[in-house]
Image (cartoon, rainbow, N blue to C red; front, side, top):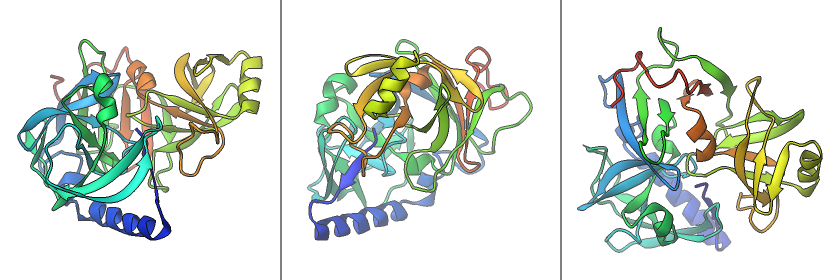
Length: 320
């Protein structure tokens, strides 16, 4: 769920930016080290799916539930205060979720947090948002998001499995490439310099297309009317209103598809990017449900794996 935090007023926006930057900087290094303790070469965490999104078992204070693995959240940890009894907080920023709801960000004294049975080192304060609107899809025990800074320096494999069986997140101490690693169908060199989602340029058919990836998004195509018309004419987009099916998706020299996406007019009222821009294809949980992936973020590379061969990661330890 990509969050666009915008300032309410100039002074407030500056204060919020400083406050949130300090928050991310204050998180202990152990928490930023991908949840893999020193001395361990690999750790596999079971994932369940809710509304198609990857969830890890967690406990916040005395409340058990789940946290979403969400590359689109810019904070290491962002709590759902509508599901938690948090100490009183103070507002620091406002923004919007990718789906359009207004998010009021507040800072609170940090409760204890454990992820997959292990305590997570935390700063003195944590941010929260009003995510009650997710209850129908994500459940009453949806406790919040594990954001991109937690995994930014990590190597990990991600297989979403399915709604019945779930999948896994495997954290690795070293970059991929060890003997026995499953082959990659395609590899993308991604840009992380903007501090946002991993980004690269692929193609839809023969049309160059900016792309990024967000584990907390089902899959969204921000598209101008001109591009939408051209892709329809070329037989690459079959759309009905707000949903569409794309074919001819070229990543790392290989063609994938078809994939289902939500359609949003680039620059229109549903474009919650900050600032709104041109065409962008955001791959999300829908694509990741079809293809396991291997993320080497220190090496700025994401590998798409063959789902027929990725089930047994013999080189990383036993799958649960």
